[in-house]
Image (cartoon, rainbow, N blue to C red; front, side, top):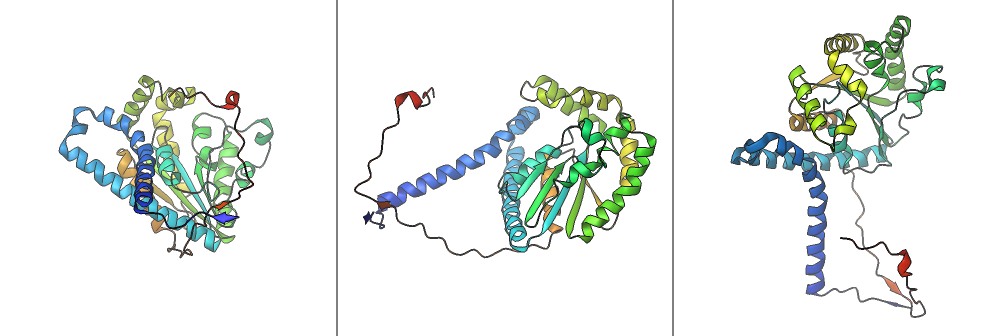
Length: 308
């Protein structure tokens, strides 16, 4: 048995640095690609010096906040904290985009997203909150609900998917349900993403004409556009009747997507008493070589064709 010389020369160090920078840029490219459609929508204005500088500021602050989210994640794991973050808002309000930026650099084993489909026949006969309970965090976890039990106060109310009795029972139960969670040590943050009538129409039109986004449009989304005022009324009632000290509502002004993401992440971080956790220094062990080992070739029939 022998070990490879662990003293890399200058050339190896330079190559490692190049690869590190390459990987870093590649990771950021993913975020940049997500912004391409915004630049297209902005048109010629998106290429002005002012707009370019604003975009740079956005990315600098986004990456800084994502670094803080990693610290929050480490603190949650270390302390066993349990955090629930609820994202509500109209269709195309930007909830998914904010969630994507929050989770992008985090460990999916620590930070999970719960986006439940419509209840099946069995779930419709259960206690209303039952199907959400199984998605609540254990110690050292945070769960982001992309829509939540507040479906009953919104889409179910507007689309007549629940009776008046079920609707009233929800508002009797939800404060007690959330107080019970808070008493058990679960922290709850509730965000409503607010956009204007005009902004939703623009975003829906963009989805209609963008083949990569058409999947986001459902018949329910189109019907929600027609029932704008009914959704407004339902939202106002929801905020009034379920805003409690143990789990208050916070409204995110979301007409500007980028500002909304930054403001939401900044506020989320301000609501949790986290601090940076010290990590032990990591030393990469030397690769061990065995003279008796012989690597077996992989059959060509198993190799993925290199089309690119």
